[in-house]
Amino acid sequence: MKTQILITLMMLIFFSCSKENNEPSNAENIITTSGLNFVPNLLNCNLGDTIFFELGATHNAIEVSEASFNANSSTPLENGFEFDYGSSGYIVAEELKTYYYVCTPHLPNMKAQIIVN
Ligand SMILES: [Cu+2]
Image 1 (cartoon, rainbow, N blue to C red):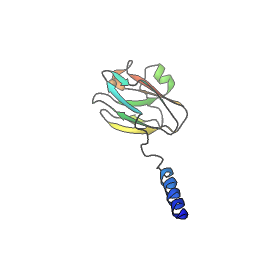
Image 2: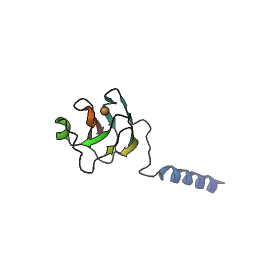
Image 3: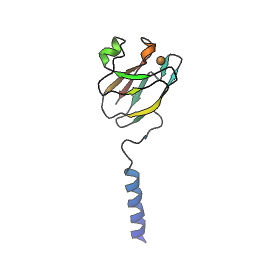
Image 4: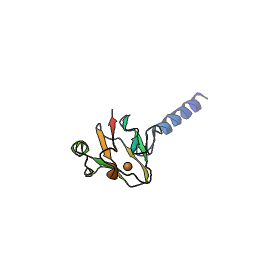
């Protein structure tokens, strides 16, 4: 009897820890668009979090460098994320950094940040 309980417990622990790394895991990190804004325009999240994007039809989201962000440029960051107009998708925050991203046609106003803690 004790052994059965132990085995059940170990299976539970095993299955709860074997979550795929790149599967969406945190439903609270959602970025949408409203008017000419990303909502929220500043998102704080934790390392390893999944961040979902749900963009309106007239908006895209292009990751840019901090310098481009400050210069209101939509030049894509090398190996950065890019979500097309009206698309949905997600990224996994795999680096301790600040992600800067913009909506190409709505610069200089429509830009936002994700800070990974
Ligand atoms: Cu836009």
